[in-house]
Amino acid sequence: MPMRSGKQYGQPIHIDPKQVNWDNLLQDAVTLEDSLDGCDKSHKHKSLKRHRSPAPWPDTEPDEVEANAPTWASSQSHKKRHIRRDKQIEVSRIQPVPTPLISEDLPVTSCGYMAKSYRCAGGESSGLTLETLMAQDYEYIPWDALFLGREPRPFVDYKGRIVAVLAGRPPGDGFDSAAQRAYRAIIREGRKAKFAPNELDHPRGQFPAVNVGLCIPHGGQAPVNKTAHSDMMELFLKLWAEALHDHILEKVNALYNHPNFSHLAQNFPKSIYPTAAINFGPQVQTTPHTDSRNAPYAWCSLQSFGRFDPKKGSHLILKNLRYVIEFPPNSIILIPSATFIHANTPVQEGETCVSFTQYCPGNIIWFVDNGFMTQKTLKLNNEIRFKEVLAEKPLRMAKGLAMYTIYEEDNGVDTRRNDI
Image (cartoon, rainbow, N blue to C red; front, side, top):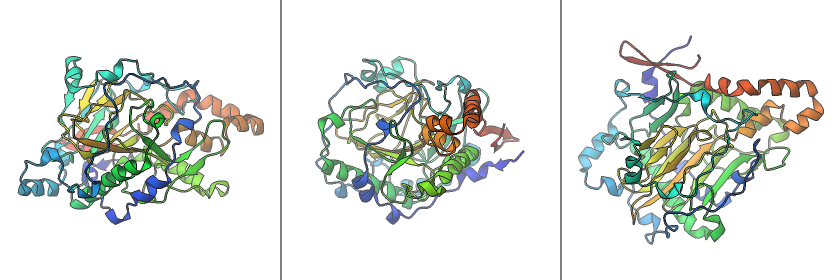
């Protein structure tokens, strides 16, 4: 049984901020996610009563925003900030957050490649302030205020499986510089896009959002690709769930390398995720939702940007676990967004918050498992394989959970294994 030292999880990821071409990414982006073909009955989105109107775009030109100087940290001395930036992650200090979650009970559709849809109640989106949630006995999770969102914290289920991670961000100025460039580009391109009113209200909230990458449109026979060519950091998925990372990589590479689909392009050469979403804000607040068309066992990567106080707003809400989690700017969180009901608290007036997400649609994996065809085509072409795929349905989520890492402690040293 392979074991890995916990020290591997504290190594920084270095990127070149000049390789992040967000202008091209945002200009070429098209909305794709709502056209994905699910395996449960689709339902039309009904506009929800929000607690406030969409925020106006900030008057300040994004290029004038001082990099690496979020408003919530302005009172800190330069020396202390420098020390915190240079502080390496100490694995011995990484403490898992135990939860009573029974991962086998998470809501998955019969096909096993997607999750059941969650419908937000009409008044549910209006009670997402920090004060209201605390009055409802949510548990507050402060995240690494000392090191400004750098120190990771894994969440484990009842079996000790790591099911979500506050991954943080690597030390050094390169990552923060790239994050600030992304923030300014999102604000700038969002202002230029002049979104129509009907693009500001959708199941995830009242803000413009654009999706790029691979999907299979409703009724489609193969994946399509509308994306830009850009580089971005390799995210933390491989560090915390190597088997899951390799599973997604295998499926996505098989699709990209297939002769019939060589025209499909990756969003980012350094990322395994086939699809991404940009939430323009400028004050992103998502309503309680699940991304049910994503693979139910796969983790999506959430990253926040902006100028806001993470102790007062933009907390990540995990309704399944009843947690309210601080989400500092530039930091990264990994969650199974298809099955975890999640949302955000609003930021304060005058603050800005945008976000970027990478994920894996479940029907992309389904398509590859079917031999690069839809289920309908598979049934017509290969009855034997079709029956085999049907027989695997009840086992699919269990196989996905078996890819999760088990968090263990051996004589005070953190070790993790990738098989069960």
